[in-house]
Length: 380
Image 1 (cartoon, rainbow, N blue to C red):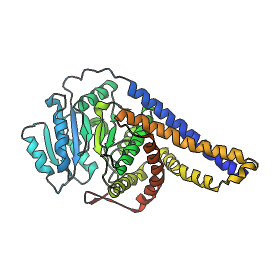
Image 2 (image 1 turned 90 degrees about the horizontal axis):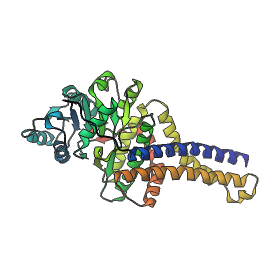
Image 3 (image 1 turned 90 degrees about the vertical axis):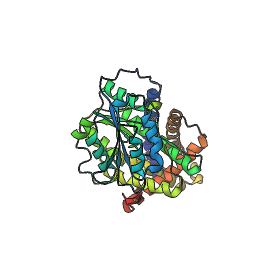
Image 4 (image 1 turned 30 degrees about the vertical axis):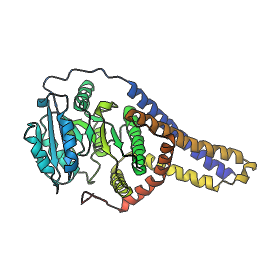
């Protein structure tokens, strides 16, 4: 029983470290949520440029542009640039129609291809130093741009990571996505708030034009996706000042994928970019993904009858504790984030979703090595 005991103890040890890390993230997230920033006066004449990369987004753009037009910043200080990534629908006519009564709205065709090129095209046309990225299918609060600008000026930030809420109609596949994205938001926020940013969501991101140009934007990136995590990586390596803001006023909301097929395609796109993430996080993340599988194998091999043998009870105890350490802190973090997002739900749903994530995440990570999915008719 020495072999099984050592295995159980090693799994217990790893999950203990992971649990302590998750608890630290949860505590930091909770502290940030409860903190009330003092509003500051925006520097005279300063404004923001919102860049909206769009491809075949005619069905969602109107609602987003209405949100952006209603921002409580003075119109002259709020530029919006929609960069059309060679859409095959009515994206151009939707934007150009709204431009007739909105002088600060600009439509431009992507100078290259893909989201990174679209962002670079928008940055080149930006009239303001502070830039906010927003996906074409998102919705936002009217105080978002002002609150972001205040935060960046108050703390002299080069890059500001921001929260994204995934919302569904109640279908199980969409509930799973809500839970998953709440968990990833908690990880991203916890890491960044503790001074080790690595994850971000490109649907809601802000940076200064000088910092973006200073790290040469996305120059040399060979991955089609990853406009968020690769920019964080470049900014961090360059010693830029990176922050995270957990404030409901800056939330953007995106719709969850409606089907399992669309869900799989989206996760394959996201997983593909992680191959390009350098540093310890990707290795630690992969070990964390494999942890429940290793626990399952160790538990499967454990024979109930061996409890009465030497070290049998200790082995069982370490296995039970390892499972609890794997489950409880992660679920607690997700529940904390969902409260911030205003998403109430059953505890059982969170537990089941986390167990499903443990099953499909490693599979998708492996599949992403061999499969290049399509996004709006284009390979990524």
